[in-house]
Image (cartoon, rainbow, N blue to C red; front, side):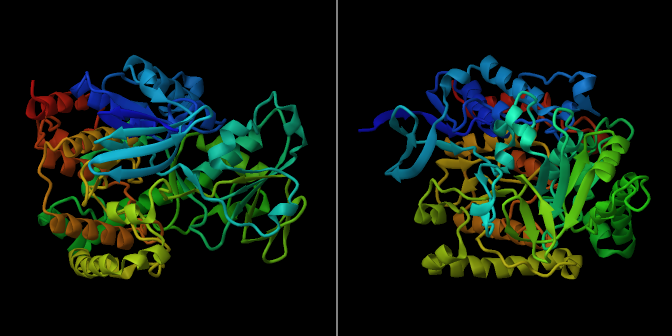
Length: 572
């Protein structure tokens, strides 16, 4: 017999988004009975201690990171670069935040959620721990598990014959693969990293400089995927200490190639419908990619191994057809290590042998440990198929066919949205990539947060964006306003039209990664501004137009937003 417990609000996930949601709710309602369910052994989510590993650093600069009620301190120089910092420092910050805000005692750790259902107006979350089964009940529910929970592991032919460990990026930290005290790891003399993302680059560099165990390091990047990433110098421009500070300004948001959360005006007309605007946009964004390529010196770096030049990306900055990230290391040191100590391969995995990765073209890569930087599935297995469909979560096409009437309705909305998107941004007709066949339906959440059918539940951390802290806070305010009924949401059909518009834009704007409907880079600020406008909040607005456009979003601004929200919506 499972224990049953009731709460005012249940939050699933104790990473940045879950901690922010719980803390914000308790700031507004200090006597509320709030419970946080976390599958891991501590707070932090992606940034938890158990998921941290050498070489894993934050992408955001410290000055635009952290929460308003516990400023993030500048990291020591030896553990930072241009204010990016070691993941273990982020882990400590989140632990300190949980303790300072009284959240730790509200967490149930090692709590694996097996199913989420709704009975009447009450959510029931069934969970398992080592000692008991528990059903948590509440009328309000926030899912803050984000996008990095369900490991995506390809089905390798011959996997059963491979003698070494195969470790997904979610488990790199807990594996101890680079821990000096792990004597058993000395036998791992040939490491192969599969994937072309920022995580892959980080772990390749870490393996190549590991002083405790000298290894041959191989980096395998598929031909059929987005290819190798482009690493942009972390150094900001002028007053911007880090590139991500510039990325959280409204002027960068206004220069986005196509931004669905900005109004149509003379500026958008100039940028998107005149040849001068088109040229300016290409110049600005291609300069970014040119700087990354020049820093790497793919064709001219001294001592480079033969495969190094295969890392040269042909990605389009305009279309984001490849991976992009901030290089949080000294560029010369990083690229010298990669060029001189890493064997780069491009190709497709055919099968695994006893101690080899065999490519489809017959080449063999000696391997005794395979590290997977293959990403994550955007899936929510805790919900049944019918409930996922009701809430607007991704469904496989096979399952989507079970809901033919709903699918036909969304199809009609998508067709209408496509006409609007292509009329507003004619250049999107010229995509360098063919339309990618999707295996799943996209996320269909209003403002990437609220299901059209049920505002008593909210999903946080769905957008793929750079500054999690700012998005987490604004999403938390919006989610709380929705689940508590403080705001009147638009009519359902209006919300659906908006969702179709955003997901269609996503698919065209980001042809390589926009299928799930949640890709977001320099549109982030306009996205959060739209939610704040719907909430009727204005305290974040700057004194002058120039400051409004050029100042980064600092965490301290959120304190004023919280107080404005309290005065507007919280009675008593």
